[in-house]
Length: 249
Image (cartoon, rainbow, N blue to C red; front, side):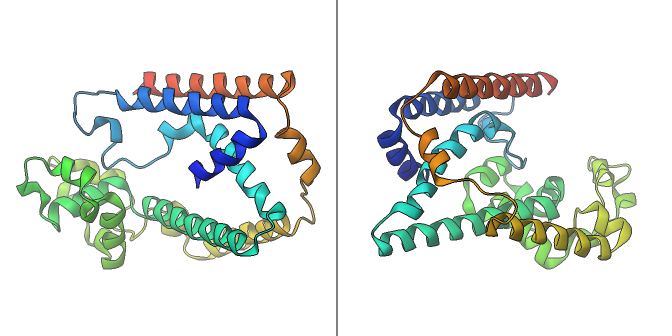
């Protein structure tokens, strides 16, 4: 969706288009050359989940995608509009699923599943396999671990004096890596989910939060100093947080 979004942002605001392209490319080159002594998979994070490398570009991706979503209301071709909406729904659902797997199963449990169940330890380059082979990607490993109930079979005391002593850092043998569920049961999860669903319904229906089309149109119109000042402030803050985070590793 992002390439298509860039097409629309280019039509509306060329300066913002080139600024976003610049930030994304610089961030890509910066992250792509990271090295912690674990090449060639250090740049990817391998089994590690999290959007920390994307934080500097998220504001720009959000702005660019906003130009695409704005087309949903102004697009005359109903068939094309329906395809864009369907694609958005599918990608949102896929993104939710991927992040859900990373939330419910701790990354180290996914690693253990790959080593023990999938027997990837017999390959010297097992981390490379998890990085590049889709069938052994963390998404697949976490999904299999969740479906099979693998985490509930882990007992930290069995690993206390081994190389895998860090198994005790997680919530095993609780089947999912959700503290509220493991400590207090399903009731708070249901309550929290109902609250989130209610807030989402309020936002979607626009009863409490409404962004007018005119304000969006003005934002994506010819560049002005206020917009550039806001964008540059976001950029500086994002890169500052990224550098501080990298310095703490």
